[in-house]
Length: 101
Image (cartoon, rainbow, N blue to C red; front, side, top):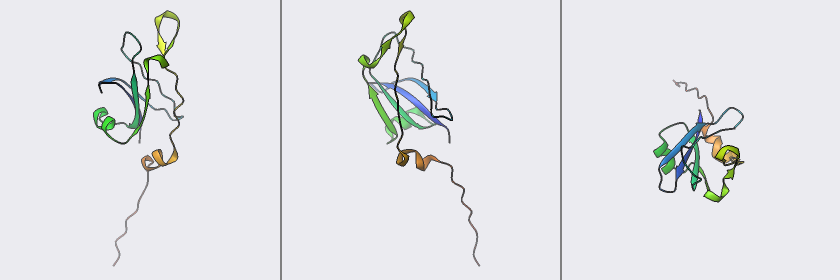
């Protein structure tokens, strides 16, 4: 199952999304003019609004958490670690069902 990271503003509006790579890294580019409070939500690649309202992993950041870089760009560096009990149910599982007589 592919995972995605969604960035929502404090009003619940989707501001950006990105895929989680095989090593667990991700980048989300936001089309904003200045740093804002954001809520990052990590979950299965699906409907962002559905994921936002679910019990998927979420982490909030304030506008003060952004780092000003050269060229007027801002970056939010985060080290999100998902606990095993969060990602374990998302792993692929193969089940074989056999009819008994």
